[in-house]
Amino acid sequence: DAGVIQSPRHEVTEMGQEVTLRCKPISGHDYLFWYRQTMMRGLELLIYFNNNVPIDDSGMPEDRFSAKMPNASFSTLKIQPSEPRDSAVYFCASSFPSGSGFHNEQFFGPGTRLTVL
Amino acid sequence: GENVEQHPSTLSVQEGDSAVIKCTYSDSASNYFPWYKQELGKRPQLIIDIRSNVGEKKDQRIAVTLNKTAKHFSLHITETQPEDSAVYFCAASRRSDMRFGAGTRLTVKP
Image 1 (cartoon, rainbow over the protein chains, first blue to last red):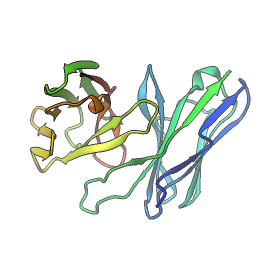
Image 2 (image 1 turned 180 degrees about the vertical axis):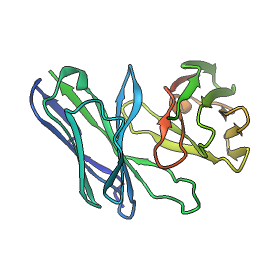
Image 3 (image 1 turned 135 degrees about the horizontal axis):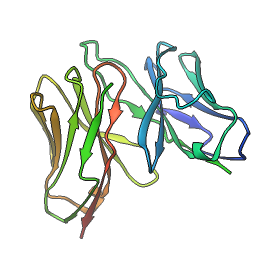
Image 4 (image 1 turned 45 degrees about the horizontal axis):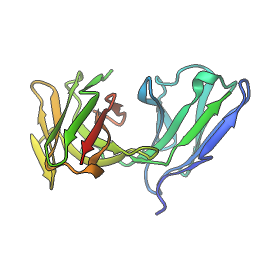
C-alpha cells in the first residue's frame, strides 16, 4: 500500500479564494482524521470520520471550513473563503480499530502546506 | 474533552545521555497513549504506544511508562543519538479521537 495520500502537497492562494485539500486513506482503514499543524497551536484535530460518517467536527474552527467523505477512499477539506490565518500544514490520517475497545496507530499522510497570502 | 499537557517544550542532551519527556492527561477514560516522532518537514510517525492495561512497554532504546492513577505517562530514550533529534508528540484517546500534546523539540548534540 502507498500509505495515506494527500494532494496537493503545497498550495499557495490569495485571501478569499476557495481551497480544497484531498486525502485518500489506506485501503481497509475505516477511520479518517483531518489535523491542522501550526507553530502556535500545535497539532489540532479538526474532524474525523468513521465509515464515511462525520463523528466529531468540534475542532473545525469556523463555518468557512467543511469536510466530506463521499466514499471509503476519498475525503476533502474545503476552506471558503480562505484567510491568511488559515496558513498551516494540514494532515490527513487513517486508522482501523483493534476491535477490543482500544485503538490502533494513526497513519499520517505527507501533509499539505497551505499558504494564504 | 481530553486535555494533554507535555513537558518540556525543548530538551537538549549530549549524545549517549538519556532523554525523558512527560505528559499528563485529563480524561480518566483515555485508554490509548501513543508517541509520535516528527522530523523537520516530515509527517508524524508512531514510535511506540501503550494501552491502559499495561504499565510499561519497551522497544530497544525507547520505553514508555503509564501511571493511570496519576494520569501521566512518559517517554524514555536511552543512549541518544543525533538521529533522535526531532519533535516528539504524546497523545491520548479513549474512543477514536486523539488529542496531542504541544510537542517536545529534542536536540541531541554530538
